[in-house]
Amino acid sequence: FASHNMAAVSQLCTKAILLNEGEIVAEGKSEDIVALYIGQQCELRAHRVYREQYPGDDNVRLLSCRFLQGDRVSEVFDINEESRVELKFVVLRPLKNLITGMNVYNAENICLFDTVDWRENELEPGVYTKELVFPGRLFAEGRMSILIHFTLYDPVRTCFYLPDVLAVEGIDSSHPKSVRGRYKGVWPGVLRPELQWTDHRRVPDGDGSG
Image (cartoon, rainbow, N blue to C red; front, side, top):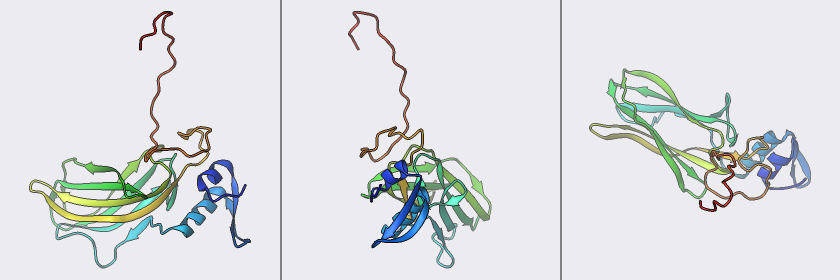
């Protein structure tokens, strides 16, 4: 099976070979070869570390962020499995109610959603980490970029607002719980959530209302 459709390769094949002008570049598990191919086609970034010019202000500064699936930094991830973004930041002075948030965009720069942690907090100076977890079967296939924003409220003050911090690619594998089921064609939608259907319920004879 030869194809540039990485979704099909991921779903149909357990092993794959990457070719360039007829020469074998790599071979191995399909998920590894798909990740290599996608990484060659577009600029992806799943880990960013700031070493000198730290985003932020005199309250808080971002040190690093990374996109993870399992325990691995993943530029290419399986949309059927749980993934997460980990943030590492330094608080420079005592803070009350530091609000963290992320916007997620697709390849067409459509904002899929904005999520914010509104929980009240009081933080002493020091280095902190926190994570945002994305459940499996939420995203559709394709490129995804992440914007990160930190804000103080009451009064409101934006500490930093960073678009395109991370860029990753979602693929739909042959996972037994894939939303697409056994269908291998194009699947519409900017998200692909797993929703709950009820069982079939037969209505009494003669009751055609609904």
